[in-house]
Length: 201
Ligand code: CUA
Image (cartoon, rainbow, N blue to C red; front, side, top):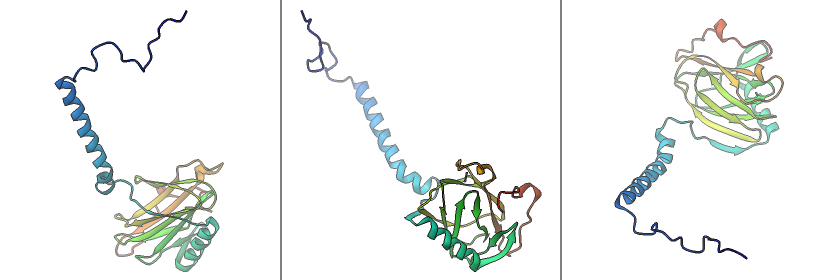
């Protein structure tokens, strides 16, 4: 003998469908208004929030991107640091940086206050671009060119740390970005800010 089971098809006996209390309407109104605020915050935060810049993302062939980077490095090389070319491109130009196990190629030398279009991509695996000691973080994915408008605001000798585990040498994957001031004076490579051996052959 089946007993009568209450299902969602039958209205529940009770009082809950009576007109909402005024306080409930007020709370629903507040919640709805807050939803609209949060909705508006999404585009607002994108432009005004000082968040990660929005870039142009295009598909690229990893090998071709790497070839483009080496060509770029040959074109504007101004020096070498432990075998890694130091490259100073003209202001306003396209700058290429490739992440590969386990290095950031090449070393970029930029001028403070000048704007560049920085193209970053990876040759082999996912890498993480973390510009130390600044709070700049990007996921670098092979096959995608993440182009960013970059204007260095401070001179210095910065390190790029890979913050995405990419293999046995992940912890040695350290790159270098040098920002010279407007006079073009080189920034001293302080002992504290050295590339660790093996990081950038
Ligand atoms: Cu590249 Cu970790």
